[in-house]
Image (spheres, rainbow, N blue to C red):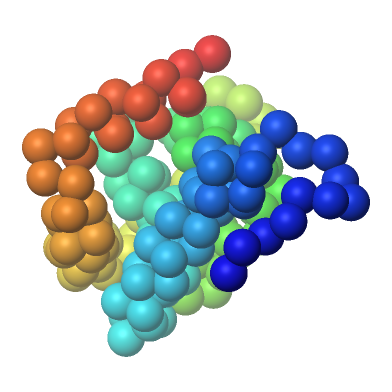
Length: 152
């Protein structure tokens, strides 16, 4: 189908020339595959990302706050709060008073959360491997480009 460029002003001849549109399409396709893979574990991809990131951050043995987790994952603080509430209801994370900052809680993964993380990580990594395998050796370049976009 040939699209005519008539009633609007765009720097792109067609949507498929826009990096933002392509990123959106690729992201939606990848997210759908992740969502389908995580469904049997009763986890959304956002829940998985926060649970996994918390598990990784806990290795530092420093108290982790909701705000720290939000900044690390680049997820909105309010969204992080909502997702942590859900993970807490599922008994995958636990909040307790922060040892230094009386205004904050520290968050921890529970044993159940650690177990689910251990089951979910290979599932997600398998989807990533399959999804990005078509890039072959160029996947390393894609990772570097993503990292460059995230650097401030």
